[in-house]
Image (cartoon, rainbow, N blue to C red):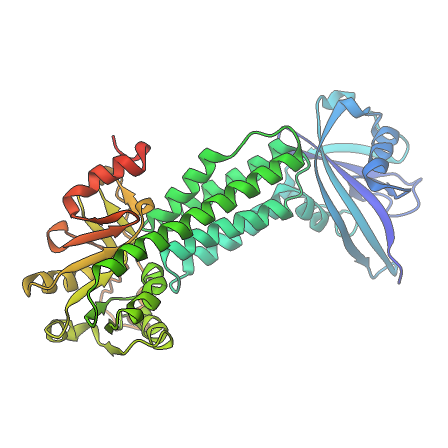
Length: 434
């Protein structure tokens, strides 16, 4: 069937949405609630204003258009019709100016979530979700859930994923004003900052992004400005990683054996350089998530001689190792490092045996001691799905490596002793040291 094109306008004020009850004199859906709507004639960006003027007596300067969405297909099986609904959201400056014509008999202001419980024209709730901030919120919450559950990617990769998501959101937002678009993206970034507290680079990158958002007069300028800032931070992340890897490559003598723990996206990027230096690697399984298997696979693909070991065999194996190399989810200004559980045990054993422990990271992971992130906990089922009664499970995901176990922290412009990290914090992030 050929869809019938219509426009629907949702008027909003003080957080509520205006719905109107269709009169007995209209041709369809008499007595049901709807937005201000009508058959499309010509350009939808112009015609919605005609409907508002006819059905509410509102002039163009009585409201501000905030959002619009591409047409939503709505099928009414009962009447054998399909609609193509062009939807708009307008903020009314003064609701007292609204005057209904004969097409509607009643107007009431409702909370957006109440729409789905009312007898409405077909698809009204779905159309509202698509055009309003609710659709955006659903996208953000879906991505936030993915981010929270991701145990495969490292902190650097997840920070990049957040920027990629904000870029997609910037392009798909229904906002038509610069203020609305900037609010959409800012709110999303603030929400994502809180999802992975142990991974400082996510919070730091999103905070820096928020600080860099430009003010813009037009929606096109705002979208271009946001896109430019996102791209700039993506490039900065990549450049920092490559610079840190260059420092690592200069540090490692040829032909050495390195122990790697768990999975680090920073170290994953460094594997090609380790291959060029003729290194061999030993990788821990990193139970219960077994992230070490992914690292071992990447090592093999890079052409590195690689051996995978159980976590419990670390002390015995360390005697064959020249250096321990680990990534970091956070570096505190006292030189301590937050990383995957098991890291401090490995660092302690290596320190006792006189084997140097190095951390490969970026300056965006440095955080003041008094702002050290909380340590995330994994799901108990990862350790034991059905433990017997009386067995308590603890599944810590991250822990802190004391600075005394660490020989050096490798970041963009060099290899630093743990005691020098506070100064690097001040140099790299003036707002990080108080």
